[in-house]
Amino acid sequence: MNKPPQAPLRLGIAGLGTVGVGVVKIIRQKANILAARSGRPIVITAVCARTRDKDRGVNLNDYAWEDDPVALAKRDDVDVFIELMGGHEGPAKDATEAAIAAGKDVVTANKALLAHHGQALAIAAENADRVIRFEAAVAGGIPVIKALTEGLAGNDITRVMGVMNGTCNYILTRMESAGLPYDTVFQEAADLGYLEADPNLDVGGIDAGHKLAILAAIAFGTEVSFDSVELEGIERITIEDIHQAADMGFKIKLLGVSQITGRGLEQRMSPCLVPDNSPLGQLDGGTNMVVLEGDEVGQIVLRGAGAGMGPTASAVMGDVMDIARGTRLPVFGQPAATLTAARPARSATPAPYYLRLSLEDKPGALAKIATILGETGISIDRMRQYGHDEPSAPVLIVTHKTTRDSLDTALAAIAKTAVTTSAPVALRIETV
Ligand code: NAP
Ligand code: HSE
Image (cartoon, rainbow, N blue to C red):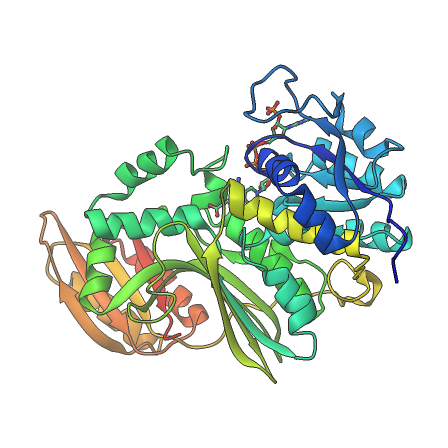
């Protein structure tokens, strides 16, 4: 029996940069297969960017142009507003709110917007019977949102982990493979166009923290709580840290971990040592990896490109196809009104720590450190003085398992002794 032809799904795309152009290309090049798979034509009716006369390497003549993303979001000939501008305030937020108010579904790649305003946007969308889809916002081309909301819907998720910022993983792995210092590799990443407009979003761990907060909301049924993510960036990691970690059989990764414990929701994004032969340790360059653990399924490992035109546009298109097919899920996998307010808890799971201290090279300096650690109940597993560079003595200590609270107490006491010549670096050792 022949089905009646379905009306086209009409898209309005705001933002024609890396991701927006990638989406336009897929729709232009794969129109037939997209229509066959979704059961209806997928068409672009209107687009918007800041500069109209920029050569973007793709033909835009078939589409209406809007200078104002809010005007685009309200157009009568747009069914789905695709937000690919970025930023968590201003045009992205205004246009997304306008789209929902005008009865449009929304697809976005904007993790900052969702991390800061996800709950309010989800409530607005669900009250208006609209959907917001955001596969591209977390881990680029990896379909992790779909995995959590659909494939793993029968699980109680127990833990979410991952390396979710490709730029940081590129910097850390390149430092190791080329033996180059942080500043040199940071500049390389900038020259390659990897860094966000504000590089602190990448190297400060903020971008990855946004992604972790979004995943935690879906995984644990809590309101997005980016402000409670314990954040630490990679800026203070030196080539010596990388070498010392490698000597012990570890790699340094900017690792996110989120779990619900009896104390509340733990979310941390920080550089950690992971075993070099583990899946996370083997992750090179700009690749991302997300590890999901559920009570029924056990552990799932997803790996793939975390950024770039093709992978990110691929994720946007997955969302568009779901809307075209009529798949309509609550924004965070369950109605936003049923998400519980997150009760933030500081990570309390004990772990061994890597400590790098730079001490004054004088009698008793090391003894003071050992005493403080002992008095704080922190046991030393290994200790090494290396690369002796007067007047400072670099000292590496690996502790037995301790809590971050105990370590911070010890670090505060160490700071008061005035035997350190710079702030210590403390990295958790994860045996994942
Ligand atoms: P981009 O290359 O900087 O492009 C941004 C686009 O938005 C540009 O076309 C720009 O116009 C347009 N734009 C900015 N402000 C505007 C305004 N006020 N009005 C109209 N248009 C405006 O950014 P992108 O890399 O494609 O990223 C887009 C979104 O995807 C961001 O939320 C980002 O975090 C997310 N994302 C990106 C990647 C990636 O690999 N790039 C991966 C995952 C998620 P002009 O071109 O005229 O300046
Ligand atoms: N700056 C991000 C990264 C882009 O390096 O992973 C993808 O979200």
